[in-house]
Image (cartoon, rainbow, N blue to C red; front, top):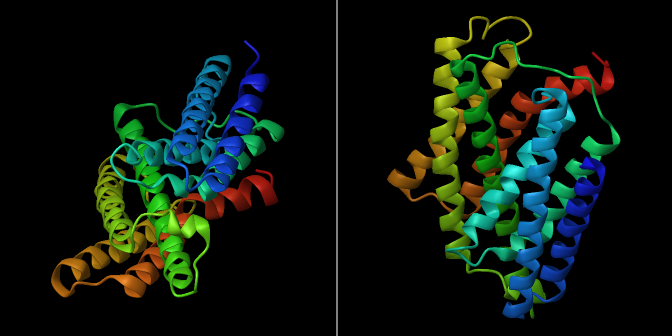
Length: 264
């Protein structure tokens, strides 16, 4: 089966879905059709990863492969969220990014990079890390959209796609749901790392560990502030983006420098 063709169709489906959601944001029937295209893209993206894993006899833990996998999970989680909440317009921003990550993986194939251990404990650590990053990635996107939505609602009249978005209360509720789930998986990732990764504070790992702990503290502090002091609005947005910045540095900072700049 031609994996390049599968990936190309998935990329086109992501982009087509984003365009349709933007263009027909006020027409529910057409938006549902656009989501159908996004589901097709996710299925094809998953098939592409499955086939490349088969061909390589294992997942390629390189920078672009990991970025593509994370983007896929974020897109899937967003589509699952649309089943209960009207958050389709997130796809306007998310699907083009997912298409870009898949394109980069396709255009810049990298040599096989396997994890240091294939034990169940290491797999638990890796999977929980990826899921945590994906959930908190959506939370960061939600925070950015909250800022845009709040600014647009103050203008007269706000733009069409802003009018069709869920209310600020719904968007904020989804934001904290994603943060709560993300912190849970990040906690599992950190706990499994401390228990099962022997060199978690080794020179090549210490930055990732410290940045991940900082991110966990920030997101946990935000949840506590929400419960005790009712934090919301700009405060929630700032804490979310600050925490995600640390998480981004932990997951992709040094990896990108080593693989792309230093070519190691």
